[in-house]
Image 1: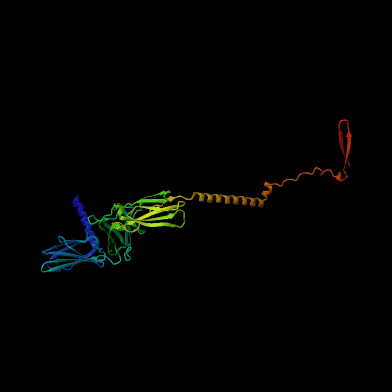
Image 2: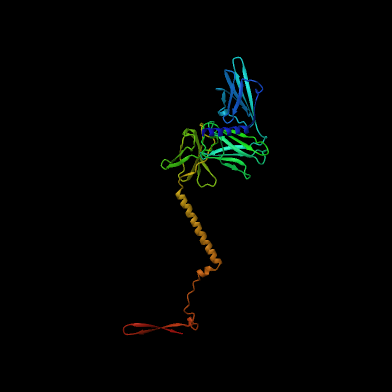
Amino acid sequence: MLACLGLIFMTQWLLLVAQMCIDWQCTDLEMPEPPIRNLTLNPWKMELSWISSTNFTEYKCSVAADNEKAIIKAVDMTCIFDGNLMFPLHNGANFSVTAVNINSTYSSICTCIPRGIKGSAIENFSCVIYDVSLMNCTWQAGRNAPGDTQYFLYWKNSRDDYETECELYIKDENGRHVGCRFQNVMIKYKTAYFMVNGSSNVSQIRFYDKYIELYTIEKLMPPSNVTVNCDKKQNDCIIQWQRPQISHLHKDRCFKYEVKITYKGNSAEEVVHTFTKEIERSHILQSYSMGKKYLVKIRAAGLDCSVNNAWGEWSAAVEFGNEDVFSSSIWILSVVAVAIFLVFFFTVLFCKRTHYWKTAFPPVPKPKNPFSGQHDINPELMECKMQSITSENEQILVAELVK
């Protein structure tokens, strides 16, 4: 079973290498018995190996690609270009081995030439890691790629891993692969390798490869557990938080934080205070106004460690502080008073215009004159006659009304 799996991976590797380089041209092929033979490159591991028929005291290897060059010493006739010495090969590269002896020096140089028409390889390749373990890679088709070109992405998380193909491609409207989604991605301390090759019935397609340190493309999560505790007597607030969650590191000293405090309720964000904290995960806000409400947000970035130094996502805004209750009550009462006045004013105006006012409030009638029906009586001709009647016990005055 293991032998079958090994054969499958070896066959896949040989196919990929065949698609990457059109030829492996070496300068010593015409020599009958060169001191260095079978110079071979494993592009997935950037490993150069050979066989030597002479006992040289020292071997040195070099690689030159994209205007970069690196030289290292060999160990057991093998050179491994690791870390910053791993260069992409899609633009071609020259590899050499120099053997040094007491009386002689010998060099063997081989060239890797990319296969396919120029401009057919993908362009604008980029990847981003988000939500701790998810990764998206995207690219654009080569400007000279035929219309039927299809692309395939392979990658290795580290030198010791097997290369694997993308399992969930992102496709455009024509069904062409333009990206890939990855799940359960673990960030390791070693450099990951990505290679995108293509196929077409019209012409050969050039491959594209890139080395990426995964922590440099991680979009940091926001800090967690942001809390604010205020003390009215001390007139200060303590802001505390926890570092963002990442998969490969558990050290608090590897982060710096940006804290932003704004007033709540403003349409345009008015920044009250902003500051940066290194390593520390708390801050004391002193002499803040007790009669206002605030919002605080925090984001993180890497500091010195293997953490992306670009600012990550902002945390959700946390509210703290108290609005002035007295001023709020005055404002509410003022609004209510103005509303009542306007309702009364427009009601009166409406009633007067539609004559509902007379119906609702009819005029008060005048009092009736008791003499209005006696037109034949002339008050000026009326006389009052009084007669005095005397009786034995009392005197009675009698008034007579005559005309």
